[in-house]
Image: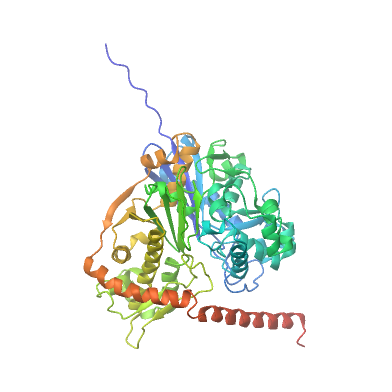
Length: 574
């Protein structure tokens, strides 16, 4: 008698969607093992508005960075169908969708979720748009928040390393109130883009625990008090209660199901699970199997975000925050970061590398970054005679000061472009070492360093980090770490796994100790790091406030130009 033919159970799939600084990426992932089967990408049509407002052509002040929320919806309409097509799967087998976003990237909306910029009367108002994470124009408001919180001994301040960043919800919200009070009054919700996109997928607004804790100062179930906020500005007293507070969704939970409208956008089945929103860095931890205490994950792209779990709750100076369950349930999730990394390299290449280098790179069949790396990678450590400060986009950790600016010291008439490029590589590694040493000194030691993000493709950069940190570097075995992490959370939300830890073990992937430190190079880097540390403290901790003064001079000059333009437009100067 023959054995019965086994019944084949159809594979199930999830979609992870990563909303980055310049584009959105969707990936189709197999639930059983995390295999990535198809990817789709869509560049935001408006990219980042940091010089002019697209709707009017109006010049934006220094340190602004805005986006158009409709660009995010285009990712759902373009990247998701493209990923499904590339994978060749039947979309009926998709059981869930997960998303992640940059943060803090908030936007003002009315009750039904419509962004203010989509109301005709607000289309030309800069404050009606999304304030991207690297919008640093709220530093003055952040300074006031920090000064008042310190003077009052607010219990939540140590949970953020003693300083609230200008990148976060409350500083940006206060700037909105004080610079455009009419838009502030019209706004009914100050929403993280991470939650807004889930709102578009489900039709329901759920605030995720990650951004609420790290970017929204939600600690032990409470936001800063009305009394505190009113002391900043009487009209700001109700900000937390009226504009921010909302139902909190836990990471890995379902925020609802895919609406009919979103199903039509994406080509996915209506009614499948949609995971609670998350932040690009934190969502990547299970994808890189970096969830155990002591494993620091660095997501290295335009900026770097460092996240790490611990079973210890402590205060780390200059950290971005510590949140109970902020990465996975049952552990304290710590966050730190660098505001500029890949952005710095891109800025340098765009603005300061001669055309002759680009021609040589083209002739060699290389990209300009690869060409510059090859030119300088064999130079002995310190052979360029340079040290740089990686503050072209301010300092997120451990100084939390976006009035700081970049510096390259030691240039001569013989300094070559590739040497400055290398010095910038090294500066970002020194910035990371500063963070790692600060955590260790605070009782939260880093035992393993794991990298995800686009910059891991540069092997020389990874070796520099290994040498500077004196630690092996492990790397995520995925080119779409955040999207894979979002897919893992989607699988949990759909009920395929009991929790994020279990899903990460099955679907995550990492290559351990791919790069190991060279002892001679590490010794040489110790000397350069000592010089970096001296400059870091001199310019960053009060030794010389020249960087702050230069920023003030720049703003004053921009104000004079704007005033003159306004007079010309109104005919006041006639």
